[in-house]
Image (cartoon, rainbow, N blue to C red; front, side):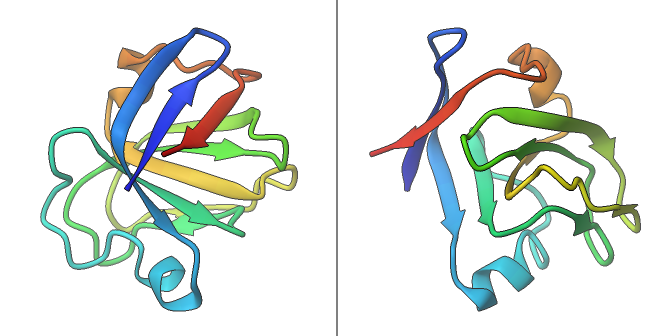
Length: 115
């Protein structure tokens, strides 16, 4: 587990960031889960688009560029949807639907992952 902070807002977003950095973890993503645990988020590396086929709940997707700056926010992505490639993105953080708004995450915010 890792910690995710919004450096722009000096705010901790979660202490429960799961990192998907190998092929299996990246392909599986949140499939098979009925919900996210309280505060849990998933960071998928080397990813600029997602799908929610076979998922059971909506999510927010925060796409990051290689400098860890927010370049796109897709809110309340329902199951059975496809988010087309965000060409500047190199990774995505998936979280419970509504969390991006709750945390006031904005395009251009600088995020940081640490332990």
